[in-house]
Length: 452
Image (cartoon, rainbow, N blue to C red; front, side, top):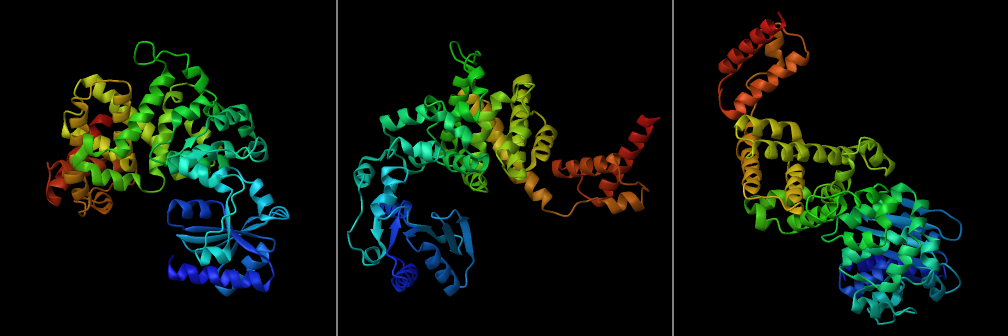
């Protein structure tokens, strides 16, 4: 145990003794400790948890963040730094055993007295055999009441299965399917939090999630996809979606085998700001976006996603379809460097996500990829070797020249000229400021003639 963390735990234990309130480490902290995983969040419970939290936050000059102020089940968080925080929750019931009986799954219903945890003594409160399920890698619900008390646990079962690499035991799967409609009672932002973690896992168990019909609660239009013909004989659009989802997971996990020369850049890209999870979310929405009544942005707003996240999904879907359409229409696609440049320029931050989704679609629909992978590598090569270096250098022409020398006012024409000059610079057809001004002059003359 890290010495600084141990010091904090000892200070919390001392406060609990002063307040004459036994304190326990519980839930995910105990689970991860038994799995040998490093802990970044510590969950405590005690009768006087709020008082302990306030005293400890004050002692460390940290803010006390209320997560739940419901009388009798208050939860407060103290953040020491982004990768280390402590949650204090009021003990539920009269004993630690009663508290554990109200938790979600057996692997989260274990506790250790804080003094014993500090001394690394084996003194585990485990009334529901959670340690056995840890060893068997099972997610088992505590009781039928579990999902009724908090329907979000229906999704959390899959979140834990995905992040831990566990299986959901059969009876728990049956209970999830039985209680599936209760998910409608849960606030969208809570669902989104769980979905982002679930989809951010290497394997998201989408097929099993689908078998419980939870996905149809989240995305009611899925039922229509299960009756529409897919890309292959005897397949449906929903079968295709599941295949595309699996292929995307394989691409993200094993980029080396398909886009080997760009693997590090792709991994760095998908590690930023939930992009890994949002890419998978794009797959689920993709077949729905073809319906005229489906509005992607409005739908995502219901889930309280941030505007950047909504734009990421929307633009990823848009530009992946442009790429797929262009490739199919021309047979080879993007023959000219100018076409490659335009696609890179327009797709912007969603370039790589669009490329990955389009490749997953080709693979999931069992379409020929013998030229498609070279096409993606060509686009990435252009982006890395030509587009990025050129964009990192000062432009050959700016707005001041257009205003002062050519007497243009800011307008769509103004922006269009700057874009075309920049494109010529990246493509290498102009290299100096003089050539940039000459090109601008030609463009202005051409636009005047067209107007006449």
